[in-house]
Image (cartoon, rainbow, N blue to C red; front, side, top):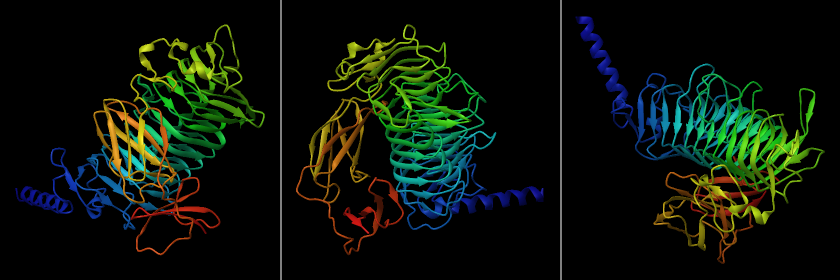
Length: 548
């Protein structure tokens, strides 16, 4: 009996001690630990990682020099749409991110990340290093966003996780740069050992690497725990995806050869793709269905040399298709090659007997619809002129109710937001209109900085009031709308009118802190680069262009 009371007292003391580290709560699902400061965030340890946590305030990590990454959690972490900003990790270590990872049955949701800068080794991400590991299942990452951040790492790198064994839902990256050596993805670098899905995910930024690069995911190499669920659904990619030496996909680069389950449905790629074995949706190669999807960017292709074989075919939709089918898709962009590689508007090399139906391509942007293995009397790869592509009656999709169109644009998906209209664009206000159910507007300036003022949206109209220095005259503003429970759609652009401009002088004396530094390509860097143009953003909104 004495032992019982002693143990109970000890447990009570431990519980009180844990609670004292946080702003409140007891760590249960009904009463999560409350986190309001950086110190409280760093109080997540291996001992309490299975608990429940909730953010109650924005947290600035710019002055934090240790304590990250946080341990992998198996409980829940709800950011409640508060912002965690300013984390810098530059030691090149393996397995870094805000968290080491998440393990089943954990959940991370409603987290907003801004201004992270990470230089790591293998399996690194801005939010997580890993979502599961080896044969261990990961958790669920949902309703999370990342803004204005940069990660440079080695093998297995992505904005949300480097390596994953579980699912991502409604994860969005805006103005994010992801660069690495191998298995580099906008959302995740590599899926291994267990099944994983990407639903309602958006990547806007730049993804680059040297081997296997994809706008959402680079590499999928498992058939374990396969379900009937679609791997990529309602996903959208903007920006650029580039690769120096391997298969490249605007959405997805490549699966392992034995995988036959990577289905893609209802997705859009607006990104430009450059690489070997390249395509807007799949590189070399697709091993699953590609349906009801479209791409509008440019593809610059090369020969993919591997295993003693030169694979020279590339495609507007995919480079190689091993087990399709491909149906109800179009490519309105252009595809080209300059090193002897071969190109086609739909599919570069299609495995015999795999169906290609009701697919369309821009006749001005590609020399042919299908490449190696073409059977014109079997495959439906239909050429349309640019003018015909703007007319919905030119298409004969299996289910026309899944598509819509507005004047001046090619068709887009029924659950996709119609393009915005910008009616005012000055140094003091940007405004416009959209659909009646418009919920959110994302604005990006040409100085590679998201507009940080809140955009007011009401009954299909939207505006943001700006202060001096938020934008510069002549700067190009890019706008994307999100309707309620809808995918984002076409990006619209407008130049800022006004009289002020960007200073071309060297760094002027200032009492303000430097907020971020970018190179001329818009990629965030950790210091001013010698011999290059640098764009410095200060905390008071001033922007300076500097040549050191």
